[in-house]
Image (tube, rainbow, N blue to C red; front, side, top):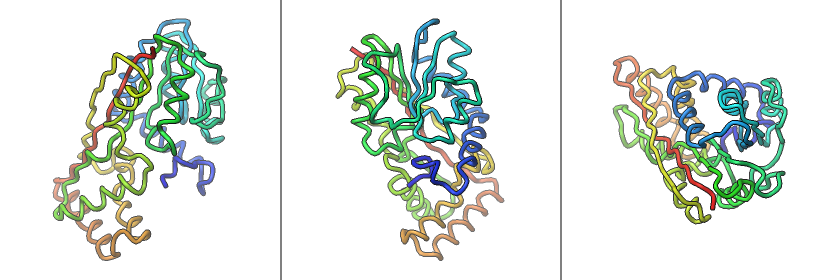
Length: 260
């Protein structure tokens, strides 16, 4: 499973804080996260919740820009420490499936790149809806790895490596395009879906394209590719970079709705 499913059990947990901090500096991430906060329709003086808040950077932005109070939840002690360092004192170390808050405690809530890692998205959304008052807003944002494309010479090999990312490395790597249906099943209304496509031409950007070059080697270690195929992928990756043809894209879905 992906390292973000169990940050505290990684060999260097603090390095995952660094990953999030680097991504937060990317223009694409800054722009879509700003839109996520706008979709919450925040009102000064009200209370909001971010689930799977990571380092708390987005929660701090919402707090400071809109004069609201923000509570955060993350299951990682490492991430909780990073949030407290940013002055986010209302941080709970808890499971997204069992939020430690009373019913209707918040005026809105969001989860950014969180649902893709959850064991039971339906149960987690059920509890997320529980803690938001009627009329409050919920926003879910995730990449959908069914939308990936990569320009290397062997497109069949590219698709196999990208499918490994989508189907093996993430619990719910292809769920984002179904978030609207998930919210509708919970009775939410005014559902909107906005796509945001990440286009990467510089392979060193977006934290080395989320470690894309290493995915084939990981697939080979797990028996999903032959070692020779993994080396071929890396060679073709490097060739695409050297000839300036490198292109990788994946689409994020920003899904917002109103609790009834």
